[in-house]
Length: 339
Image (cartoon, rainbow, N blue to C red; front, side, top):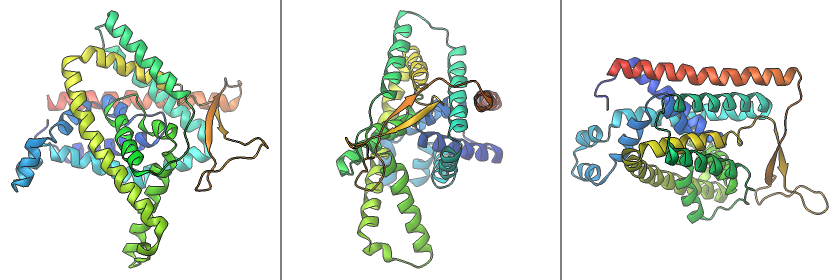
């Protein structure tokens, strides 16, 4: 862990948090990949692992400075601040671009994943039967997940809590997209769009002195859903970090090979050339969920035609690869500075 950080380091750490937060919200993209490529993945996992019984004892005994230092609080605070800002800003910008320039957005992410595969695998030398098998298993799981049919939205609080635990998997396990799993569970819009918007609207109203949301049954329901989801995410984050820290310590080669496999498998999720298939009834009418939104059944992937739009998409794939290589360069430079 770094004991001191310059102002430049702090700003870049917030930007990394922005990147992780934005990546976590995009189906098929993993915030953990951002951490891995930018060179702070192991510090992130190790810091989360420090949220344990010792940390809680320090907190309960009022030793707040010791608690903050013990869990690498400055690092986690800056990173999570970036993620929080991302939820209310960068993620909304991403929503806009996905809506209006979907092909090019997916192309950038496709390129970033290709770049990530190159980055993680280029220095990995421990190839043997077990690591090849781990790579294959990771890739098969990743590809299989991308072809599963999404479920129907369900706001049962126990399921929402479970969704919270699952959603943070992408932050701790590179290549495993928590947001895409939420789509498969049918709760992506509920938990990462509607509930976040409800909180945003509530903040806006409260700042204006309007407390009418208290009488809004639907708003209270959404805030309750968001609170349970956040609790599940917190539990999942700490639990996964302890598990992954142990696995990385004892089975680092197999874990790295599995991560490469997951990331290869996730290429199927972010394949740029796809169209959404909505659920329809026997009469050919689109089926809506309880909130009046079209239910997504799956995605149909296809090979692109050779035209100007496709060439532009290839250009954006290249941009995605360059972004990852730039992140890798900065991460390597940072590690040398603090060595």
